[in-house]
Amino acid sequence: MIDDGSLTERKPAADLSEADLLALLRAGDDEAFEELIRRHGPQMLAVIRRYLPEESDAQDALQEALLSVFKAIERFQGDSSLATWLHRIAVNAALMRLRTRRRRPEKPIEDLLPHFSDDGHRTEPRADWSVRPDDAAQNAELRGIVRTAIDELPESYRTILLLRDIEERSTEEVADLLELSLANVKTRLHRARQALRELLDRRLGESGRPGEMMR
Amino acid sequence: MSDEHLSCGEHRHDLSCREICDFMMAYLDGELPAGELAVFQEHMSLCPPCVQYLDTYKKTIALSKQCLDKEAAADPCSNAPKPPPVPDALVKAILAARKKSP
Image (cartoon, rainbow over all chains, first blue to last red; front, side, top):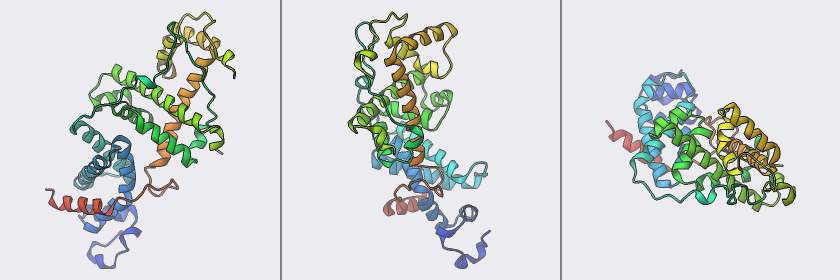
């Protein structure tokens, strides 16, 4: 552990272990705060951008998140990793920003929902997806396609999809966070998934043989 | 698969594809009551387009999870691709805001 009394002899901030960084943060050390921002800020900002694609909103939310980290760091017990704790604070700051900023008009989602004939049957054939989700994470091009498609979802649907399918929060927790009924969360999640499926269907189709993207 | 094989309009289904689509999330969550589950499964046994839709619906969930987890992994020490650094001006603004905050 770092000796706070000999700060001039300590390691460069970038070389500090998480435990040493935490000790210095709790002591209110300025360099440690800057190192926290540089070390963990990029991941926090990436998470926030999922909810707030507009850069100025995302940067404001990151600032709010880190200010609350600075205030709460003494209460961090280490029950989870520092990165996990910061991730949760980043998501909460993004949701707070969504709640407090002026609501922007959303694109309708209807065009992205499945189409049926008048008697309720599917009207168009669908192409096979040759995508293997397990391999997808290794493919930057595919990650770009998925990320862009998620960004295209109307905000209120994207938020629910991110919380349920990416953050794996429960329906009850999402309903609580967004002040919606359980039924509303479920309906919107289903629509968000259908819309994302449609967007991916179009984009993977455009790539010709999407299965080859994975290899 | 040809268009002909994907057509389901000639089969007799108790539920239409539209209604089946409405049930998909409840089916995946294991929340369909027994009677509706049986109808759902019967429809799926007769309707390749719905089978394919369900498959791609599931892949959509898995893909988004895999891709976004990898894109912004919680652990900065992992082998995941690193997101770009926080802009210097923003780092300075946050540090300045911290000094001003009570």
